Image (cartoon, rainbow, N blue to C red; front, side, top):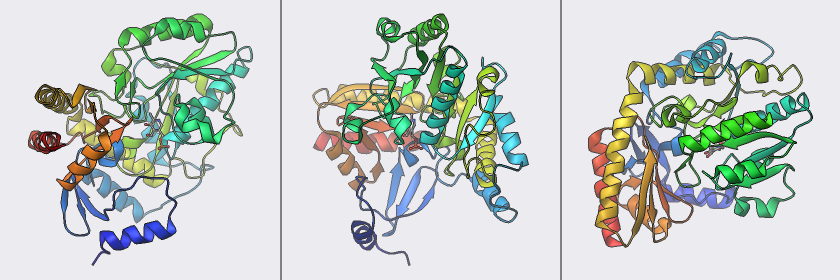
Length: 401
Ligand SMILES: Cc1ncc(COP(=O)(O)O)c(C=O)c1O
């Protein structure tokens, strides 16, 4: 018998730090787009793992690959080699387009993937006239470690932990003139999420990223994409820059959905930048170990075998049209419906927190970001019926608040 949700909540209150706004549910099981709590209550999860469970909970190929690996070897450090890491690098880099001679590095999380990407840019900058400064987007999010939070253009997340890493300037999204103005002779890279996740599902336009590519080239700087939330199929292509028809970056990084629920982050850099990572410049004890790599390979195999990229597009279109219908139904409470593929948002005129809590009580899991934005990152395996069920619950809740 699992402990009750109340018993677990009491233990959390006594023994864990309070840095998450946690719902008092002891989640004991997950399958596809559903999870169950200790009381046996079933929830429809339209935000599985905030983008981690891109194939839903417990995707069979990933579970099977991990089970098999558990009987062989769990971990060996990165001073040796193993087949799954080599094959994962080969398979993942093959999914990029327009990145010359790409090479991969593996770590354990999105923040770590941001860190290695910032470091590789500065290593490259040292060899290119001592460039070291970054330009990133306001409302972007790149993680919680010091480099990553310094790159994150959200003063509210930075103010109590200053001083930050020096050398970061923030510019508004989709404003090429502001970007050009922010460059100077020491700028080493411009960093963007092609589709911002934590910022409230704001997409860069193709034209903006085209302009960014041209500005970076003109100034001899690198273009960096953080695809931690928007990558790995979520937008209907392996990478969001492909869905947007935007130019390829020099460096991109990902995490979240890469391991299908198992922690892994990765960075892919074009060959001439990747060669800056020589022995002694960077490392990660756990990064890309056997378990992480077999899980990620199973994710790629599932996306390809089950044709989940086109499915993400059709499922995303259904979700967006349902959200637009809710906007029409509740014009006083809903300001906007937007999204790309299976990244969607409903911007409210009222606080999101109350709607999120009521949805949970009604059996639907979503979250709020930026105070008034409801965020949806459903699994690529979600069915039409599950999307409709989620929209129906949300419609009922919006009618009541
Ligand atoms: C775009 C982006 N970058 C980086 C991160 C940080 O990832 P992690 O929480 O795995 O460190 C996140 C997490 O939400 C993210 O959305």
